Image 1 (cartoon, rainbow, N blue to C red):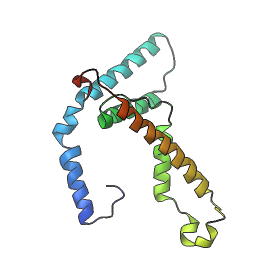
Image 2: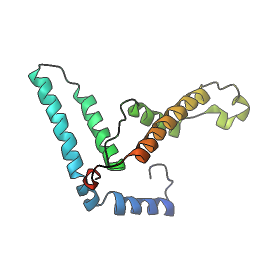
Image 3: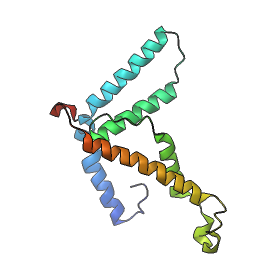
Length: 150
């Protein structure tokens, strides 16, 4: 929706998001996921306080948010720790608004003056690996009971 130009298509996408993704019943259906992840975070902070350890709350809240989003998207916990999801999101946002001189002067594209081609290649490879892992996990996932899926 963020990248769609304003018009009838944007209005349709907005309507779909509001009706199916952001409606009260859908948001409420994920309450248990949010509660479980928050309880795990509070438990971690409690243990750290008892052990008098320093806790980076910003990082822990970001991790909790990622876990909640992944569980909401895929219906179960996935192992995403080997990927830097924050970096993937930041790179995707960067490329969405990046100015590449070769878009305006195609004859400079072969020179890759800004290093965009190399950076995009690395991003594409990392994103492909991330998505491939998600697909493989999803194909191999067998819930022990139907209650494991949210």
